[in-house]
Structure formats: structure tokens, C-alpha cells
Image (cartoon, rainbow, N blue to C red; front, side):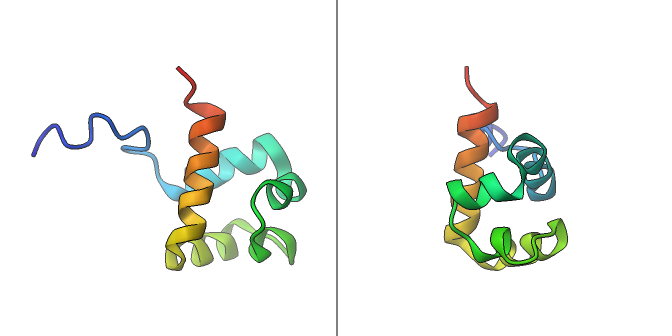
Length: 74
């Protein structure tokens, strides 16, 4: 089981760090344009977005994929 995460580009990266980096890179308005999620539009905050993303797998996947496309280019 030791090698299961070797190919996972998000291994060891917390959701909060992903969200903070995306907000720093794009800002809330641009994040809302790229991923239509109400928590990015209506009174956005890291805390409320994390709460929503942890409970909503499809939204978390979209955020993680944007992070990979933006920061994990080889």
C-alpha cells in the first residue's frame, strides 16, 4: 500500500491550501466564473467554501481539477 499515492498530484495537499492558492491566483469573482458554485458568488469566504466543498464531492472535484490544471503543470 505504500505506493498508492505516488501518482496522485494532490497527495499531501490539504483542501484549505488548494482553496487559498486558487483565491490568491484568481480571486473570488474569477473562481465563480470558472466554477459556478454559489459559495464563490454569495458572500464568499474560505470557511464557508471549505464547509460546502467537504460535503459536496462533485464541487470538490471541480476545485481540485482547476488546481491541478493551474499549478501542477509538468
